[in-house]
Image 1 (cartoon, rainbow, N blue to C red):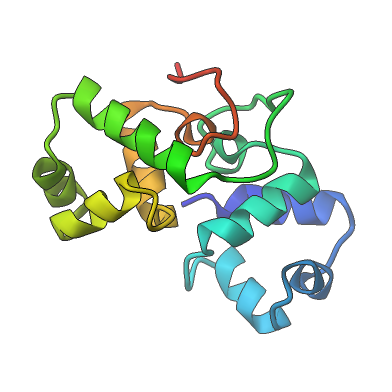
Image 2: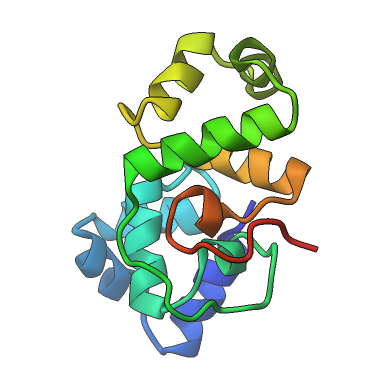
Length: 149
């Protein structure tokens, strides 16, 4: 999915798995599974890595080679929920239709939009890739760009 850039960023800084595991407060083997794509890194931990490396989600996801300036460090679930709802309506998607696209229950989409839960990493990735919308924009980390080329 997007682990090539995580490994590349780590290796370019001469860091080993244990170094990154300490940053995330994980076991070395756990982080290694993320890089090898055995399991998906939770968004809040991916955000920690984006902040550490000073790169955007769009860069990590290989949607862009840009590293945005003035990007916020924190993800605000209320802003991300509002932006997900705005995106959904712009694309004439009901919660049910988006849920079907992502193969989840409609209540999951409702919880994301109401700021109750942070969107899951694979769902964010799938939405952004399919609709060419910035992950950083959806998460409220930046206001621009909204859509990717």
